[in-house]
Length: 132
Image (cartoon, rainbow, N blue to C red; front, side, top):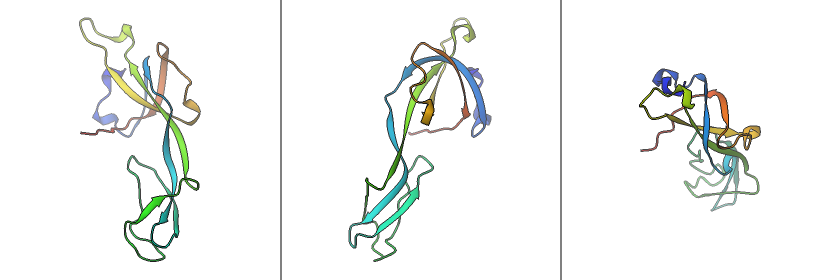
């Protein structure tokens, strides 16, 4: 259950069930980026983006200029993602308690497969994306 998710589950494969209460629009996410040097025009990349932070080159291999890059959007590859908010099913909430929620990120073919009000089971890797 959502209520039982703890720190020990971080970066582990888990399965939770609940009711979808919210669904976002579909957003683009950088997957493979090509940067153009603003000084000499040299194309750097493609650079794979794996985490939450954008990975940029430090210096141009051609002219050695530092931090003078712009994204080449025609050569860059994006992927789509969507977030849903999953809430404990009413039968799982102890009496007198508020239901707990967890946010899930859907990728690729999972986008738009569910809508608010549906009861679903989600299996995936539990990660913490805390932004203070």
